Image (cartoon, rainbow, N blue to C red):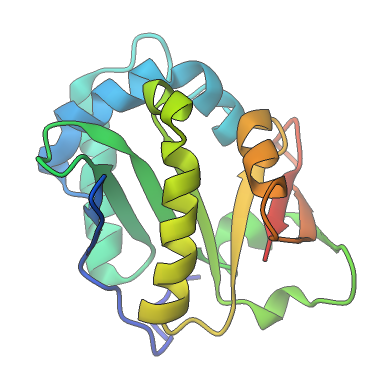
Length: 197
């Protein structure tokens, strides 16, 4: 259910001219909250829940980030914030979860082709704040993630996972050479998740 038993370590950060990825911490709550609430309409489709609610608060977000910081330290899952180079604006987030995490273990996973789910160790998901979609920051982040995962991580296979309800991100991924490998249906979600390699 976590990365604790795997021979994998989480790189501290990666930086480009446009953004920095580093582990998210509770102190990021205010900047992260601003990005979340600006993007709440499409994040609800990405999450396939009502999160974030209209009355979501900075303090509630801080509690969430404390959990993510603890999960990262305990190697239960790795969570990264995407910041502008000056770290004055959160541009989005990246999450790496084990493919045997409860989210996936409880779902119905259907292969598209001849791949097996157990060939992959990590499921990677990400989002970029709404105001940065027009500048193709999501495509730049995806490109950086692909290189970073290939060069700096030691997973025995990874997948990019998104919600079919997050139409903009599905379109982004399908305009790359990534291929759909699995569909995932969770009993409590209105749409499928799509996993690409």
